[in-house]
Length: 477
Image 1: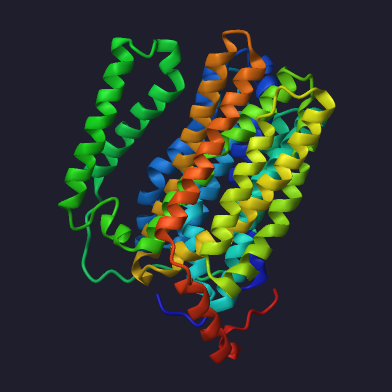
Image 2 (image 1 turned 90 degrees about the vertical axis):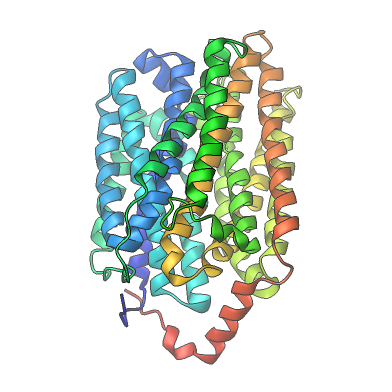
């Protein structure tokens, strides 16, 4: 849809608030596990399922939501997601057991599925060149930095006001986001031909991902060699193969596999999946210091404040490095620093003071790494695809984020809880955290293999910015 509208700071603020609502209800949960468990009287296994459900449902439906945003309107999908955020958060505020907790988490996942790709597409549509990279860096502050903000804020809110107040604040941010973006024009792709939604692909994908998630989160409860677990593993493998087969033969597929012929996009998406999988670090580290070292939720939040500060600072630094060197260098450096930071948190054999210092430094390096990686990765993903594929490609990119987070949390929590049964909580935490070091190193390998030395997006866009500087003016609002 053609428009002369140029994005404003008010629009950026509204979108960042919208993205932060996801982290308020997603990331804050990992910092208040003992409080919720004690208040609602539910098992750790059920709570781990509830934690991973939001990211799982976000990942499952985000691609479909990205395509719907292209077709029906990116602003409309953003608003729909914010309304779902309010409803899902309200379910958690009034929850008195597992039922409303799980329902609320599912609704919140659907909310994130709508908000994430639609807001990226709005950024791509209404900002250009270096201004777009600036806008995306603020989006990354909400998306990546939001995890640090909400990890700290969640602990503080839960300790001083109670964990339910986290989700009251989430409702407030969602409403503020709707107010701030109300003047943004609608953006959609003009449809040349009518296209049918890929319901078959969606159903197969949903069932396959749910089966995989149940295997990861409940496999130890069912027994790894039980008929139920083995049956779920078989269903997951068959579902994946069937999904790929039916999608490759469709004109309007749920996932356009042709996008992965683009190596930079592929590298950004795979590494995004793996670096979001390290979210399991926060679950294990926060739970361990509370259960194993006697920290309160607020104290564990304070322990990660270095992560909050460093990720917020480094997102803008990553943007500047992107413009100077291209995407590969900051993405590689970010993965390496994140791996080192996570590794320090795995040193659970250290005595209390030494371990606190190691974890504090580890969180700082973790934040520096993720912050440096964020904007170059997002810019690479959105800049190397056609305009009419921005919503769907952003959906796939964010699917990688959500599924990476969901499965990373599920795997880390499962490793931690399984080894904890033996009574060695230090070993359980160490192994659970080291799992995330492996994810970060695999992300580094994907970046080395797929991302070119010179970033297509950054250098072309900066040169365009110099030639057409006046056309990219961004009025303050």
